[in-house]
Image (tube, rainbow over all chains, first blue to last red; front, side, top):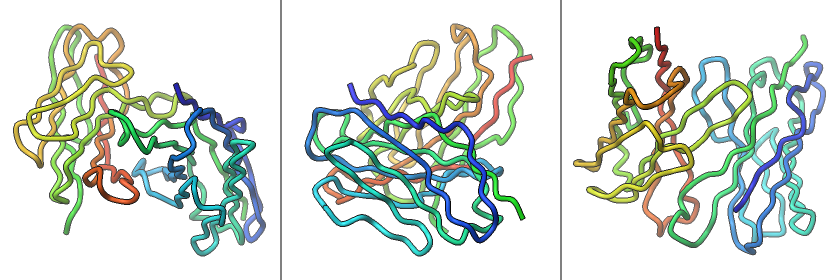
Length: 117
Length: 115
């Protein structure tokens, strides 16, 4: 079974600085998707960025980018020019591409990010 | 506006009572999901449904039940058999399997407290 590990329960960053959140996963499959979700204090889950395993190019969405290392099974999230509104819980998630439960997401336990003004 | 609605936002239940959480989506998504969120535990899958009139157990289905009679609705019943039901419950939906990402879209959640 696949597992997702976020080793940093809490992180802190100064406003306008850069922070990297770590995520590792365990799988025997070669094709899959990876996601980062943000959960602000409102508790609404918001998709931040996604990555297909077969793509070597790292995904980028404005100030958010990933460092996808397939061989190392690592999927870290970099937030540049951090803003106060980035303060939230961040969840890394894995999705299978094939099989009966292919739509299901497997989540890490999350990293709580604080942004200092 | 398209989206997922969950009601109520807060729900209080006495021990021994069953309670039903509502989840409705107007995104025309085939698949729907229920997650439970506890502090420090992330999201854990309770039940999921990939098509109307069909659903499967997730990782923590004991003490819960669901139905999927309509494409847009996926209610979750927390039964008295659930030993520790106090938690935050999130509903999600996603497009059909053929879509490229099948990313899940989430509702705003229901906070259930057992008194």
